[in-house]
Figure 1 (tube, rainbow, N blue to C red):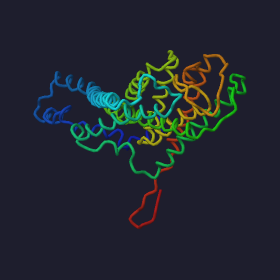
Figure 2: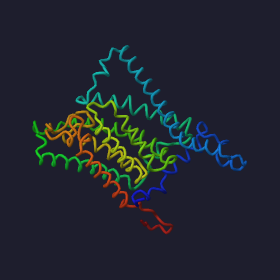
Figure 3: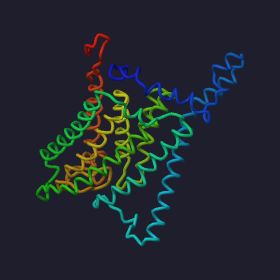
Figure 4: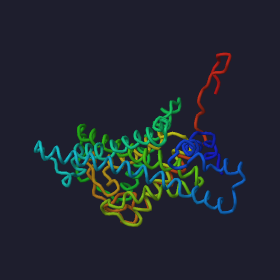
Length: 348
């Protein structure tokens, strides 16, 4: 295993779900723990097989129950929104939402995405996990600012490079002078921030620790990335290469969590990936958001990704490989925190 991955073994991300497994009586009853069965001499071959099956299905059970809580909250908010729309005769039409109008798109993602997810976390913390889970995703750390800055700068650098490469190859044409519309970009940025926070909490915050703790590192990352890609099946203009690109993005964000043990880096990288992709005029996973540059991409679709965006082209896959390499390199050379020894002198 590379040093970039091995540095995180002492972090809570691999210990977190072992604690949860002991604290969730609904999923893993104390009377059925392997330790008690061994003490009683009741662990036979059949019992071992049962425990192995439970080890496999436990994370699926946790994810399923949590997803059920999220869907219940979402349906409740959709019902309340429809009721308010009918009673107050508000001009809200969910079917007419479009990324080209970023403000209503932001509120849609906030009220029917992030808020139901946070309510699901609060419910699970109260009745299932029996401990605070959300603070574990954003621990107080002197390296948080470093992680945020690296994630933001990496996303900008990758798509600035892609823009220059396409321009140099003659694969794009700026059809309108760059226009800096601050209010529009503000709402676009908020939309991407809410979307990134939702997906990082759900797929990296919840799925990844549970899966890696019970299935191992590689299977946990792979299945988490698969779920992340399947969540985008309804995106417009989606083709197989686009689905594979989103799967690789899931691997990238998972590794960003693994090498840091917190969601600061994957959140910043996810946000900057989407925002600067849109900022430079490219489609984002099939959606066309307002941007400074109005582009006409004329290069071969195999490389440019076509209407879906660079993630569905070889150029986007190349950027993802670069991002994965940069993230692993960052994890290897990440500045350790400064601590204070008993004499009062700071030390690395």
